[in-house]
Image (cartoon, rainbow, N blue to C red; front, side):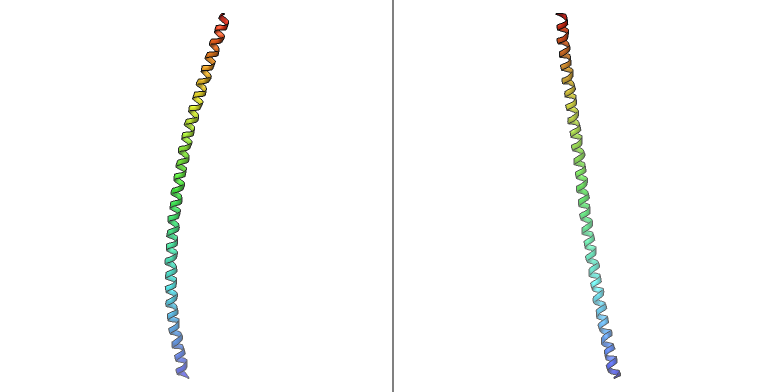
Length: 98
């Protein structure tokens, strides 16, 4: 009977040993996979940040271009208004003289 119990204990100890090794291997594999996933996520975040920075840069450039165009349009409108006012003043001056 002692031999049977000792045999069962030995088999249990061996199976626990193999089970622990398997668990360690699985944990190591899971850790490596998690590390790879984190690395990929980090790379994706960097790409997204770079894309966002480029979009902000483009938006800034577009805003500057739009402001320049608006400034040019305002300047042209002011010049046109000044020309029209000068023309009208000349017409009034001629009408007063005659």
